[in-house]
Amino acid sequence: MGSLREYRNLDIDWNMTPEDAVTMYLEWGNNSWHADHRPVTSKADFSNYFVVYAWDDNPKVMLIRRNSEEARELVVLDLPEKIGRRFLESVSHLKGVYAPNQEVREWLETQMDV
Image: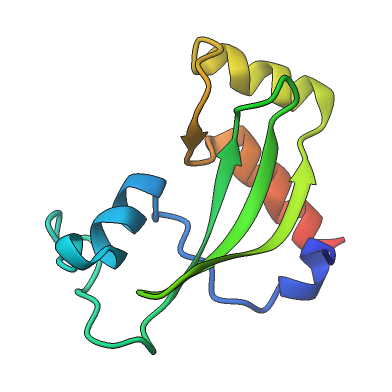
């Protein structure tokens, strides 16, 4: 997979969480229950957003493009060791998929500008 720099002009929804994506794009959740995002009306509606994949000892960040049919991983990157360690501490080392915190977002933004 490519680098984040390739996607620096992509419209990123920094407010999209994994939970919001599931709510919006699964057939039962095709609504804007928080009114933070407009409802999905067709297969052409999509979101680009980041998640932190924390199922492994070393968390990764993934740039996801999701529509009502699929979720594609555009880029997968390991978090730098210190940032990853602090992120895991912030979620009490619970395994899961999370929205990026502020530190992770700042790191991602610098990677997109490199």
